[in-house]
Length: 141
Image (cartoon, rainbow, N blue to C red):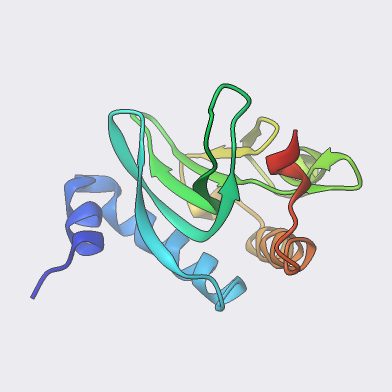
């Protein structure tokens, strides 16, 4: 029986196998995080570790994943929503990750082969550790 997450992978077409590889890396680095599909824009992302989040424009608190994986038109995006010592974790580690493009919390890449998987795994473990008390400065910014 195919579940919603498998359907999400299948809908990615040629990117499905690469998404599965990234998913396996995330699950190995952060095994304690729950995994679920999350609505984002007009589509869905695969989210790990839901946390309370209240955007400035919202009246109510919602949930958003600590880590999220998405397939874009030309690349994959891995969002790591963690702030450590006042800095966005992916942004501070961008140069150590390999051939990627980074925003504050987004790591963009075409293939996992272009990333230093050890560095990415360490970043994910550090994001989980930094938010293990349920407090995440990312969601307070």
